[in-house]
Amino acid sequence: MGMTRKKKKGSTVEERQRTRTSAVLPGYPVADSRIAASIKLIESALEKGVRTSDVARKLGLSPSRFGHVFRTQTGLTFRQYVRTARLARAKLLL
Image (cartoon, rainbow, N blue to C red):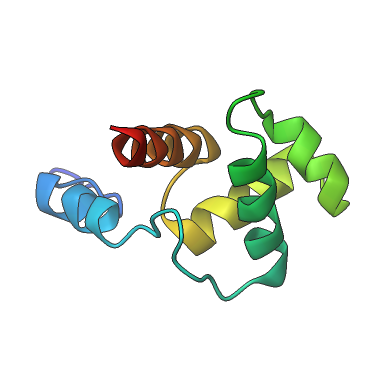
């Protein structure tokens, strides 16, 4: 008898795409006030560059905790969100 392995959450292509499409995009509200504040910080500092540790420090969180909460609330990692926000701003400027 072979052992069956549990399937990881988000392991199929459909599940990963569903997660990506349900992500919060720049300009959309989030439930957690800390994440809403971080999004304002990100959008105000896009040209200068923004780091996870700087935003986390301003919010009084450790970088790892901030990353976890940010991903849970937005559906994107911090870097993915920054990249998406930069692309959205670039589209507006075109």
